[in-house]
Image 1 (tube, one colour):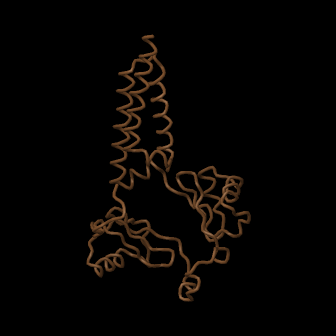
Image 2 (cartoon, one colour):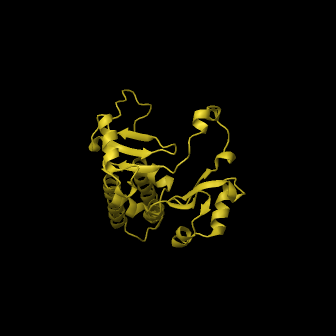
Image 3 (tube, one colour):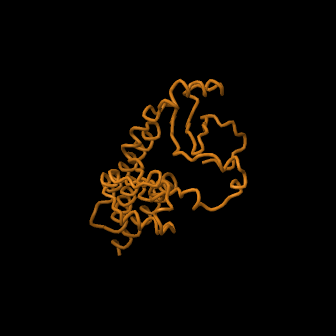
Length: 236
């Protein structure tokens, strides 16, 4: 009887702990946006199962190990939110596998991604003819993001506007992230001087900018750290 009570108490405490933890980090883990989060969710599930059901393991050492894991995850999340380099190291980066309708064999070889994998994921997106694809990116989550060629895209209200129809599609180019210029994306057309002039026109300084990107239509999009929104729809 004592063992049954012990098991029940352990299970209740374990579930309570994981509920609190899920409230804090549930969105990140559930999204499985990268291999790091995916692996961590499996480890946490293993910890909770052992804490709750394996009465041969001492509960307090298991709890201490679990809390240490939570602390490490919190620290990594905090550091990666401040540093793009650390974020790329933890999460990896997306890989372009089709560019301007051409399959990038070298990129696919580097990540051991086969044509069978590519065709399967295209079919899952409802694309059975690879000739329809303009760009395809394998995200860090393992999902494939696809931009179809213009003639294969579904019609929208914007298609009725001739000015928009004549705009050429380019691959979006990130210029600023977290207040820092992404030097490798700068070129003769979008130089540091050009970028600083654009910021000056908007009365902005580099530390004021959260994110800046050249959109697919060639326009500069800038997001400020201070959005000046008095009543946001949702606050986390």
